[in-house]
Length: 231
Ligand code: MN
Figure 1 (cartoon, rainbow, N blue to C red):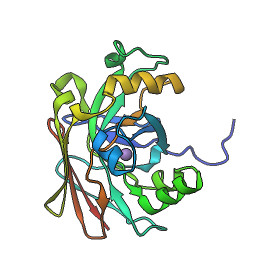
Figure 2: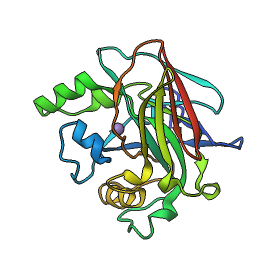
Figure 3: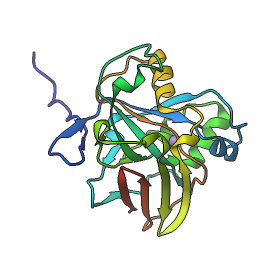
């Protein structure tokens, strides 16, 4: 069999403390998973989880100790930051129970679900998909992936984001409406999860706009920092 052109390369993310790279299969995202963020977006704070996706090659991997560069996207005047815990899946499965969900977690990372908020607001109003608001190129800056085996207490870790040194978002992972195991269980009812899948688990309150030249510093206790400049 001849291919019409060479196979596109698989996006990969560095593994912390290793020479290995984690190959990305799909990127799933959870909407409104912290009560206070749900309220700031106009919800009640108690909705069931819902999901959307970004293309796998939307990742912008940033190695530890380096500063990533995210191009300001076209067609928006309101680019927002959303700091999120990212779960990296290491094993295939469907209809996974909450009790067994932990076995499917390979590791964790710090991620930014960058959002064209103006296009998202328009999509919501018109009842249209969110793809252009959420799934654009470089819309998923992500730190190195930390193996779950070396981590403790991620479920109660602090999550925060500063822009140019000023605090914008600060919360705790245990304030999620649906915890990581519940998210895996629910998502796996809709999709067969595969090794290489990433799940962005939702953002706490405090989302806001960024401009070219801003330096974003996202951090989750135990996972180090994800630093990105908007260019
Ligand atoms: Mn988000």
